[in-house]
Amino acid sequence: MNPIISKTLGGLSFKYYARNFFFGALLAYILYFLHTYNGDPLPLGMAVFFMLNTLLYPYARFAWDSVADFILGANDLHHILPLSSGTRVDSRVGTILDDMAPICPTCHRAIHRYYDDYLKTNSKSDFDNKEEAHEIYFQAKQGIVKGDCYV
Image 1 (spheres, rainbow, N blue to C red):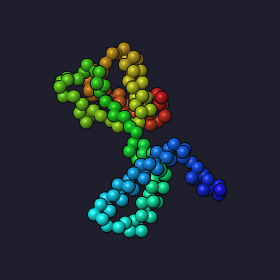
Image 2 (cartoon, rainbow, N blue to C red; image 1 turned 180 degrees about the vertical axis):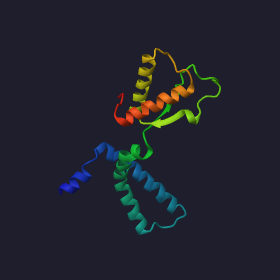
Image 3 (cartoon, rainbow, N blue to C red; image 1 turned 45 degrees about the horizontal axis):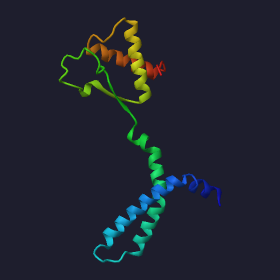
Image 4 (cartoon, one colour; image 1 turned 90 degrees about the horizontal axis):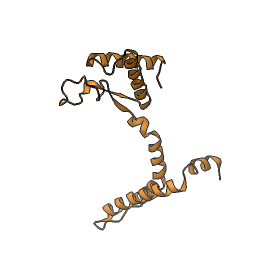
């Protein structure tokens, strides 16, 4: 077999291909059923399209699985003023959007380490107020961007 075809077609495990082939065939069957339900014949072009869709669906699924985290973003939502903080004035308010920041999981851990170091260095168990938490968050964020990451 040609090396290019071998690498392309041989890149998926049989189990992965079979599972996704089944779902591709199921989708083709549903579309076939919907089209022929009234007794209309299936045009040849549509039959070829269904067959190609069934054969290529596993590869499309593999491509989607490979880029889904990049497209959708695998981010955490960080509470700038930690939920455990006793500085929250009104616990009934809950989380507000101004207190949230989407960040990657690695940076999220780094910011919490920065928080812990800051509180320990200043002999504190908690932030004094929301403004202090926001200031420390921005310091941590700048430290991560400059490369002083607490990862």
